[in-house]
Image (tube, rainbow, N blue to C red; front, side, top):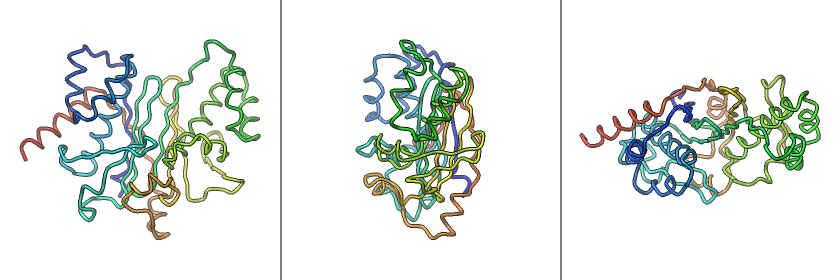
Length: 287
């Protein structure tokens, strides 16, 4: 079961492709994915979108043993990607409830997967606001934080300490909402996070601890962090729940999934990702 837990991340700042190299990488993806990448004007946005799609197909191929040409990834109305199980024999797939989530911000694009639990992933870059002070910037988000969270943010120390604290809380909230698949910012202010130096992280909704959820926050490179949420499939938003392979689990089976190790992130280069997809395509053509 642990083989269904993956954590991959790519530093796109180290990839400066020529137009031909970019087109070559793009050609490794199904043609229907191309417009979601080329619609962006800025090359950095195109790179993030391309690497995000590449990670999804590479991970599904690597974990699920599905021939590359038969991988079908769809998206909910809220934009959450998922492996379309209706196109495969459910009995033949490796894991009870394989799902994944992607995120990108700043220099990094990442993906995380789980075999049973919902997974939410959110990467943030500690960007310094350019046209306003840190306090003016974070004040725009006041309504999304509990009084406890807000006190911890504004009393974190220096202006930079405050900014980092804000981004860490924001990342956890985003990871939770992305795991649910709701796409609703309203859910951000419903959840309150408590922690001990950013470990032993707990979440509460309406004052009640979410005992069937686990959370992690990890520093990622220079001035980035990544948050991971792992929770019960029964909590998924309606549109996402219908896309899942299985929602109802016995207590023992679910707790096994909940307490699987959350692995360290494996850093991949874009070149390594391209190599995985090229190998996948060759295997498909041979078969």
